[in-house]
Amino acid sequence: MKQLYTKWGQNLDTSNVLTEYPRPQMVRNSYINLNGYWDYAIEKIGAREEQKRFPFRTDGKILVPFSPESALSGVNRQLQPDEYLWYRRSFHYEVNSKRLMLHFDAVDQECCLYVNDVLIMKHIGGYLPFSADITAFLHPGENTITLRVIDESDTGYHSRGKQMLQRGGMFYTAQSGIWQSVWAEYVPENYITFVELTPELSPDRVRINVRTNDHEHSLYRLTVYKGGIYSDLSAQPQEVLFSEEFFCNDEELVPMENATYWTPNSPYLYYCDVELLGKNKEPVDKIRTYFAMRSFSLKHFDGESFPRIALNGEKIFQQGVLDQGYWPESLLTPPSDEAMIWDLTEMKRTGFNMVRKHIKIEPDRWYYHCDRLGLIVWQDMVNGGGKIHQWFVTYAATPLSLKRIRVSDKMYPLFSRTNKEGQLEFKNEMVSTIRLLKNHPSICTWVIFNEGWGQFHTTRMTMLARKTDPSRLIDQASGWFDQRGGDFFSIHNYFFELTVTPEKNRANVLSEIGGIVYKIDEHSCVDGTYGYSICNSRKELNEAYEKIQNKLRSLIPQGLCGSVYTQWTDIEEETNGVYTYDRAIRKIDGSKVR
Image (cartoon, rainbow, N blue to C red; front, side, top):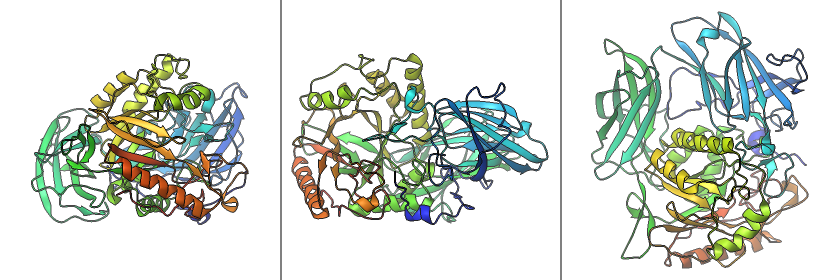
């Protein structure tokens, strides 16, 4: 496979890797970036009698947070399911009155965390963050962090997305280990752990719940500032709109009179400060966060018999693009903050007002940029389960879905979901994903299952997602194997005439269309190609794209509410992107449906 680079990977400063504050929705003044070079080693499981410490030898340096399979890591080696991947680095610690929290934003797939060779915790789940208070295990001076990683990839039932050890077609190079930022921060003895902000319209208000580590009813002070469009959290707001004290771990309603609503054309954000108060009402902990006033719903307009998607009660056609978030030099890890911003800005410039984040969870800053730039997000859950039966979930499913022949999701072997532990893990990770991301105003829809991959208990999972977040729309089965629930009748159609079938209570969306191949050899990393139809020139591709756009326009009066074009960039064999994999050439000009 030929190695490609984007301009951000080519110009990477290895001494300053992803240095921006990684959690924009909960910013403290205390921040220690632990990205950079770590020692690493790879060894066979069982190679030593005692495998609780870093091996006596190292294999060299790895650039965190890039996975060892990526070029930017400096390793370029595929971790196998029968191997351990070890990380180690040291850092200096001075004893003080505060506690040190260590954060890993994503480690694929299972890991053990050691501090000074003492096991602190274990974590399973390659896409979700985890943290540990490591204060009690530190001593003055130099301390050591060690991480031991196992990745079963597609040989197990854990969530893995599109990763496959034997990549090809619609599945891509598997990655392992640390692939999002590692960082630390100092917090007081009692500190804020989470701030939940849920906007409500008519009447305009925000439902807020501030949680702390001690779960006591401590006081906090909430200060809401006048915000703005394309806001930046580094700005210093001046005008105070609201300031009051409340009890932690209790839900409160904050009025927002004369609120400015968030839309893709006017992504207005409000800042707020949350200060945890001590005995004399002095601040002992403080975080900066933000929210937006907006609502997503289904609504009947103008006497139509079917509902449409509404933003703030107004009709909106959601023209989206499928984005899998792969980079040629760094796989699932964006090479820089600027690279993420460029992708999202270009999506809007191409005519998209929505992006479907396809079976991947991005770094928190990606969602922050969607919030401030005004790009609506449909967020997929990351699929897991056994080996996919492609003859069933792809080839047989396509005609069955178009004929609306319902297939029960209780046939667990066909859906590769026989493992009970895997079912429970998916359920817990779905809830964790929603809780992790629900504060981001750009998120409109939770997509639970994609094309039947690991699908099970669809109705129950839909009810659980709705309970966890009643404020969002739900696409319970994107593509096919619809179980007649959720908010959408959601179809993938690459091969047949595009049509809609309006329903009384659910909106009709074409959640994957297009996928047209046009390969530019010098900007492709593999010899083969994969897609759903082929064009031989850029002119032919753009004509085919515009034909799809014209068809979508004609379907809107018939009840079409949204569409998702496949896909944003080429990825390995899949050369069906708006852009080439290296983001060097824009293949599709783009246009708005309406």
